[in-house]
Length: 262
Image 1 (cartoon, one colour):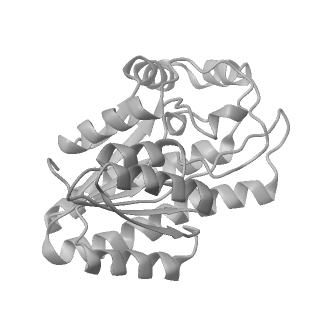
Image 2 (cartoon, rainbow, N blue to C red):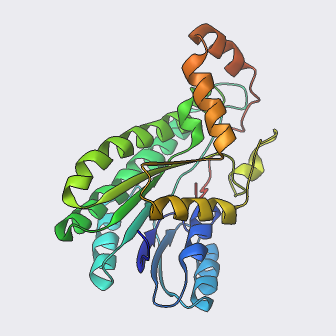
Image 3 (cartoon, helix red, strand yellow):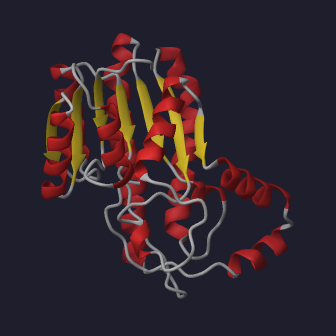
């Protein structure tokens, strides 16, 4: 979509969500921003308002199905939504052991159910007027079975698969769907990683790539390109036994989960 005027973003208090809010902020633009940290969300709103946007914020957990639906319907009545960005997500790892059951379930709740709680009511309001665009934030981590972060990788693979399949049927109702697959982006999530992160980029650069991809209605917006190609080739060409050996050599990710904006 070339000139969106009404944008709704989850996970907008930090990371990619914050950077996207700043990217889209401007005169005649209305932003509906959700996050779980009221102080950070307020700071983001202030910056966007200074850029000329009208901003409406809500402290909201994306796993709350009823409140998410109400918020999206109310936002759309206030300013018919052009773009909905299902961005909220959390991460966690194993610290070299077994991922805790509670962490595993929480990651799936936020990263999968949270996306569905955003996309499904969003599609309902957009399909009624046969206009709109939905972006689902996945991750390059969803292309490989990473033993250091099984729940995170699997949850991101699930929403990528869902989004790319849903794009086909949604287009018949006039709604465009794109899946965003970032690599490492500077955020609250990546600050806990005690290992090298190749091709890591700023949130501003990531937001620029995402906005450009959405403008062109790309089905998959994956970046950085070299990392994406490497992961795709590794998963496609390596024999499964060799791939398992290579993946075991990856460093452990801390067994913590937190709001990430990714």
